[in-house]
Amino acid sequence: MWARQPAGPVRRFARPLAIPPSEQGQPVIFTSGGPSPHLLSIADRYASGFIAEVWTIEEARPQRELVRNAAREAGRDPDEIKHIAGIMTTVAPTVRECLDPRLAYSGDVIEARLPHLGAMLRIPIHPDGFDKPLTPEQLAPAHASPRDPRSSNALAVAREGWSPRDVLAHGVIDFHPTVVGPGKLHADHRREWLEARAADDFWVTPDIYEDGIDAFVDAVMPILQERGIYPTEYPGTTLRANLGVPRQYGLAPRITGAKQ
Image 1 (tube, rainbow, N blue to C red):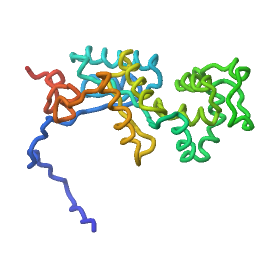
Image 2 (cartoon, rainbow, N blue to C red):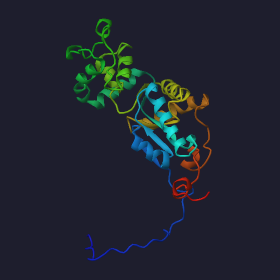
Image 3 (cartoon, helix red, strand yellow):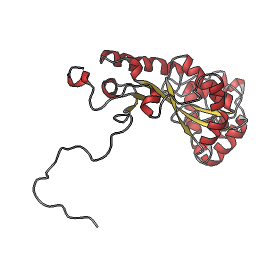
Image 4 (tube, rainbow, N blue to C red):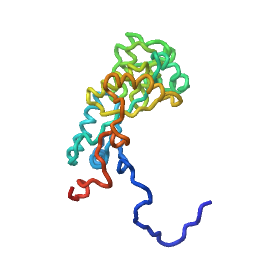
């Protein structure tokens, strides 16, 4: 039952919590979204991680520089803010083995997205050809819509010879870049983005929650470790230490004006 609150002013008492401090200091602060001036002004002062909304390297690289420049202007080392790109994953020995379960659990959503795919590719797609690969003649006038940053990925998948249904099953309209296929494809994606300095790291969203994490760990992580992209041991015991960002309690002196 809810207790009735007493009438009158509420008294507040400022005192330390009776719990031990966190090993990492204060929790790591993340911001997320696009690089708007308002968001950057928050990130440059407070954040240690910037979760980005990006779909291509060409889009991600300049956004990462915006974040780093904002940190410099705030008097920080730009390496203190990690640009984290999202990625959605389905891992299986073949691309076909990834697409079939994605189609199964998507249900009617895939067909409802057909007009959207046509708008992204700037070509008409008739429902009668939903399960047939797009022909060279159909793709000849296709081009990525400038109104949707995911369109270039959709066009690249369509040109690989997949049907419209399978193109959509590749996750080209998902809210992050989607990689489907064997572990090597996932490792290649990560290496390409890191080498292009389009991201400092990734946050992974497996699309099949029952076994998606296990599949990623078993099939992708060993390849990343063999390539020297991912460590075999964590450098620390906290998120802050593993991100490589400074220990901190409360507001930083550069914000409060206090002497360091």
